[in-house]
Length: 189
Image (cartoon, rainbow, N blue to C red; front, side):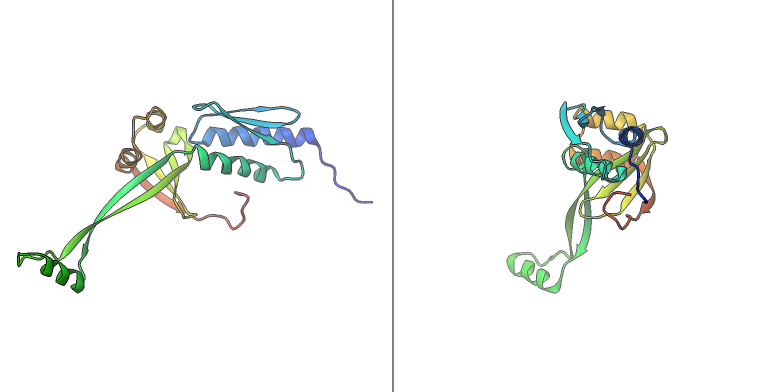
């Protein structure tokens, strides 16, 4: 008879190693406690605790992905990039402006402001590398910061930045390395 053996202790040991790695690369300060019941994740800044019960049928990567999903939504740092561009006015827009104005000088362009929401999803602290994700997209953008990423994240945690000023500082002091396409499955692998 064929059967598979699942060791709870081996599962927990592997999970602890992978969870430690996840916490090291998270852009937020985390602590975790394991018990017989499951894993408790503590968000250090807010002291909010999240309990995840053991599910030995769940692959370890999926277990960690579920933890990341909860934290991503509630605690991961966000930035708002304000991009202004000059766009040509359509003939109809120019005609409307001409009718509404006493002047014969009608502008040919208008300024359009786009606000792009970014989430910092991962940090490689010793290399000052950030992975960020644009809201609504699955691609991740890898940036190398020319300043200390620790200093930037501490300033973010201490509310030294608004969402806009954080993005302004980040993009001013970072270069795009590459764009990482997502994997096809939903486990975060």
